[in-house]
Amino acid sequence: MDLMQLYRVAKMYYLDGMNQAEIGRQENLSRSQISRLLEQSRQQGLVRIEVMLPDQLGSDKLESLLARELNLQNLVIVPVDEMDLSEEVINLAIAMGAAPLIANTIRNSRVVGVGWGRTVYQASFHVPFGNYDSETLFVPLVGTSGTNDPHLQINAIIDRFAQKYRGKSFFSGMQVFREREMPLSRLETKRLHNMQHYWNLLDAAIFGLGGRLSDDTFFAEELGEEYAQYIKRSNIVGDVLAQFFFEDGTSMDLQERYRQTAFAIEKLPKVPKTICLAGGKDKVDALYAGARAGFFKTLVTDSVTARLLYEKIRRQIEQ
Image 1: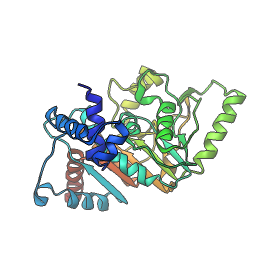
Image 2: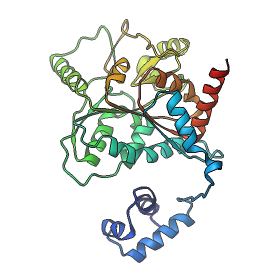
Image 3: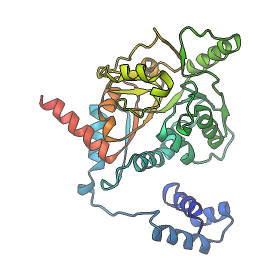
């Protein structure tokens, strides 16, 4: 049994809104074969269907309240099973929920910036293919990582988005963190200048968000264990585009030691369309602070994180 084919068929039918005839043409199968695959996907547990009364769900009311309190233009809450709240489950749910929103939001955009992280990485797989030629240019909002983590390979993520949207790619050859005393070569200086030029033309930006630093964070490898521990003790609440920020939305200055290749988060409020994909209990404070600072206008998160954000807001009001 080809589980990936079951997954593809189920996704096209239940999430992308394609009918069985359309799926059959894409998979080179008959409608009866597609019907059997959809039944098998349910039997294998790849698809779970829940019917809930509106009063029990309450997602519309929650979305409206959070969007208003966090000054968001748009908020999408993706339902998740509270009995299975692993990071992988949350990331995949948010990525799949964000895919059609991303496709619609960046339509007609000329320059789209993309960040990195597990959820953005997953979203790059689930954004549907466009059926049109596009002049959209996808550019990295951060430099490259020296780790082997696929979720941080910004050029691969950029290329996948461009392929899905039939657009163009601008690849980064610059490290996200570089020792201050290491000078840039002539070619690197030109590359950085070109990247900054595109940053000034951004129509939209898609990125993830991290919470407080943990002991297993990749930043320890990028910055060194000693400096990572220093940042961890500095009361930061999270990071966006490899930039650490505090509860009031101000960012931590690393310029004394590092030259950083990343779009400045202080400029994100000026980008017309900004989409943040993030969820998890450890990111509630960072999401709250990031939204209040105007880092993103649209947030896609999971239902558990949304309710924790609501509880945080309620406590703030009661104080």
